[in-house]
Picture 1 (spheres, rainbow, N blue to C red):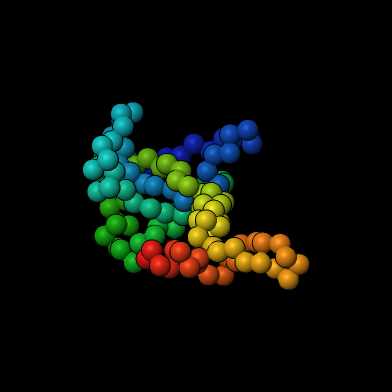
Picture 2: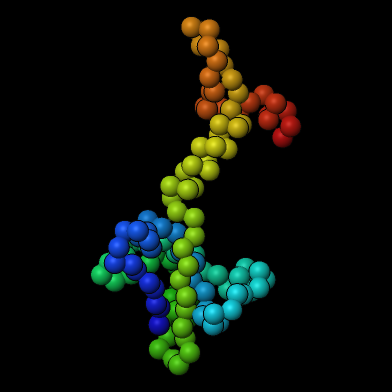
Length: 126
């Protein structure tokens, strides 16, 4: 049984299509240990959030995983938590590119970052 809270208002964004989510066995309201998170977390992408939550598993070819998640037995309950979304990922990637890109001098004499390649200092360090 997969359960998710989808809010009725836009004040709380909730889970939307395109979001990355984690699926974890529900262990009550208590936090899980980092070791348990690493061992048990399943990653998925939300393809549709309303009227029913539809997830695309990252490991699409694992039939055992699908069978485990959908097995109709007592206590087979999972929680779904939102991970970093695509916009956050793109912003972090753009920041990393900006940090690693060298400055170039334009024909007008101003400097700007050349995001097509890493800086010579970064290449030397690697």
